[in-house]
Image 1 (spheres, rainbow, N blue to C red):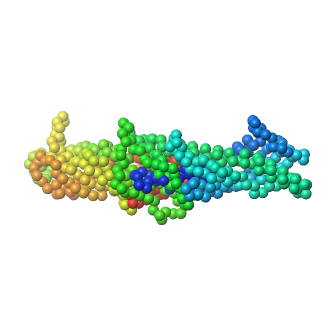
Image 2 (image 1 turned 180 degrees about the vertical axis):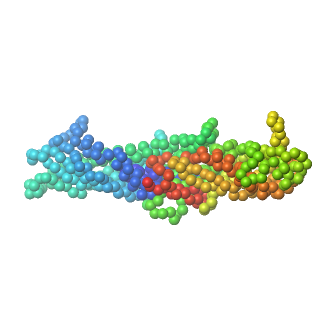
Image 3 (image 1 turned 45 degrees about the vertical axis):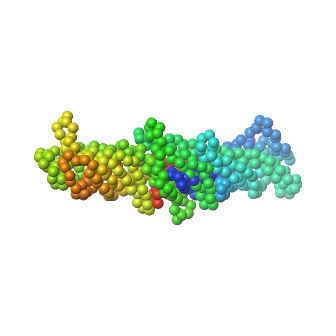
Length: 454
């Protein structure tokens, strides 16, 4: 069962070596936690012990012992080890008391300490595409056996009986527990590839790229995220050949989720239309009044065209998909579009366009996690270029407006972007992962979440 858990985690980890997407790297600490939780939550050993005392249809009675009952099942101690290219080897150490009527007459009490071992191989379910653990090679090893029979009473006969009886009954009684726990763990992958909404903008689905792989230190799972618009159109993730991998200096025993810059770009592309905005406010933050009079301080021709001060109307459109770039410690959101500034007129009349500029600017991205969603907030990093496309007020040097529009974008436009980003982006739903304690770091071409156990 531990093995299965490992395998599932592995599937998640194999994520993104060459293709854009997501990568999961699952450590032994996480695997131990999940398997132990599955054992405790399922109460499977106790259930199996209870079943052992019932008469099973078609089952042959055990010669020499009747009225079999099992009690006092010890809390299992679980030990896991990664088996490279296979999955997880697990050992469950436990104990119990077996009661019954012995062949010698009277009540027999047998106190057993045993180890259940199995290899949990990670597979991929052909029907669902989900990770799936399957146990193989289950064995039950007796560590010690004590009875209430006198030690001098036919020791050889009694020991032979106990050995043959227990080796006969225990595997059929305890090995199904491994399979049952794996079923329990497999269910925790059920929502991994379910579409999850990004507000009303579309959905994100995480699919396994391949069967998870196991190393001596972790399970790695490759995920290929599918980003879709409401109409069902799939957004193709950019492939700039920017492969990424988890840094090699991660803390021993830690688990990571990596989300590629290409994948985050795809998610933000869902919001591209929402980044377009028309701004009519006359007073915004610390900016000077947004009127033709203020603008005339930078472009004198505006005063000639509009003798009376009029409010400005600004329309910003993002006409290229957003792009996320990442290097160690910094993530930027690049936006390309147009900025048209117009002079407002009386109600019912359309504003008069003053000029249309092509703009390229980038925003610093700060990441945070709330429950099972990734959130972003931005601040202006740089206004990279301004190019005049058209003008009704004659020629002017658009570079003279760099300072004005730098302040304008930060005060008037960045809040719009941050409002749109409040929608949040869903994180992979696997093994009931709680992301609230995750530590976030920006690495080369990816955002890395160090996953913490509760």
